[in-house]
Image (tube, rainbow, N blue to C red; front, side, top):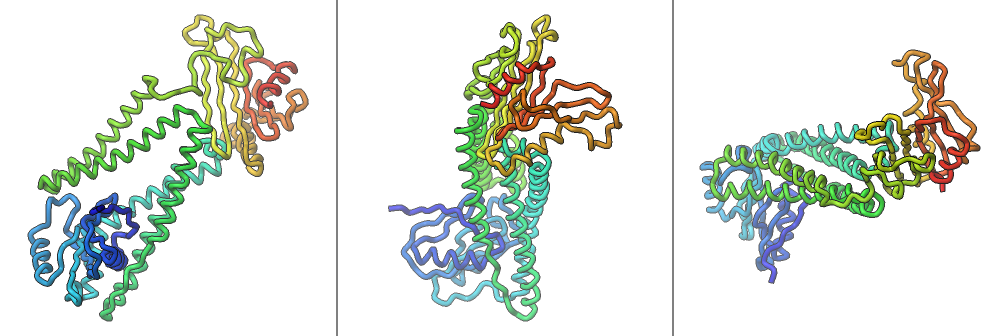
Length: 457
């Protein structure tokens, strides 16, 4: 028979009202709290019974302490004399339970209770959420700016989309927790003066919703990586994700292991923080080594020239020696947008590499029609400098419309230097794709037809 149960609980550090109610319900189902960690709560099997719980706070405690302080232990002993047994501690939180039918309450002074809880929150809860809020504002704001200024690059990269979305979720959670807490504290402090304790609010529903949404987004991200994107990036992403979980479990194991060994608070803190820096460094070093040594498959990127893996090659225009060429081939794709970047150029180790013509192009495939114009505008203004006031008039690069017929496109633009000469750099707009292509020569109409045939099948 199962005697232990581990659960991920969605209770805020300050929500002792909700925690007490939850633990009472769990005891009625035959599960008594045994320990609380940053990852999960552990319960042990008991006979179902009606048990009273009380959550108190000891502001001077730390999660790095090897055990309760002398004052804390004295308080625990006093509680035990009145029937209140310690179930678990977590940071400054202390959870007691009492099997008596009508136990004596541990907290009877609302003013002291609110003040003690607030001091405990200032020690652990509030600083953490201030930091998370700052991170959410900074990175979430950067993500929103990327959506506005560089939608093509962002929407074609599933990892950037997931991380940006995660930072927005972090912003939502941190704002919710801080606003909820301070709103409660303001009301509770005022009510305490009248001898009334205001129950702590719950953000459980919001936390659960955010976690479910994030898990769904992560599932889409993994599916996207292995079905649409670069296999190398997919395996690297999975390795980094697994490494993150390993690091979290390892750091917690080290911290709790040192507590069991009765290491001092200072030593535990130093060694745990050291693990937080050393373990990620080791993990990233291992992933980098595995990538460079070819352990991960890299079927979408090649260094030697291989025209069989790209849609348009320099060999479609010239009879060249492939051995003298290097190819860069990068592909990012999501369910929204795909972007493939190809560049072929002479190998620098070849004596006459600077005389070899090169070709580079970026194919942006737009899978959702209503964002096509948005993506087109971004790619257009990435090249056109006509509105850039930092560049003197006459020296700007601007796009000029060209006849799209030879290209078989809807619209074609060519980059033009205001001093009076055209560059062999074009922006081709087809029905569902936009192509940024640069030639090392003046393309003929036959070359344009080849581009249409190869890149707009």
